[in-house]
Image 1 (tube, rainbow, N blue to C red):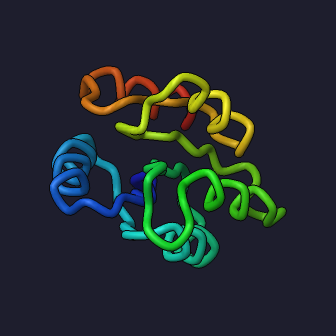
Image 2 (tube, rainbow, N blue to C red):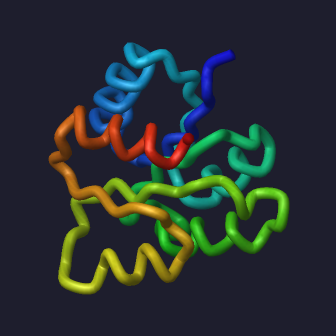
Length: 121
């Protein structure tokens, strides 16, 4: 059985890059285009891991991560922030919101896959 990853990303090009990389690595994907859809998809599908953009419409990735972590059944799901929003202190804010890792765009595909594998094991 393949592992399921929820991608919460509002830009289609970024979703396509992640989709191509992750499907070729054997993952099943669920996609959401804003923070509210991301929280709902996490609750409905219970993915094994979440890749969360920070700059999202409606609610940002920090708030979406906090809402996911506030649901007891979803708390164990690792959330990895994958963002181009890389100002000083943003990684700290991501960790405080419940993320287990912080990756900046553009990212190395090998590094992203290694981080995913680390948090799925």
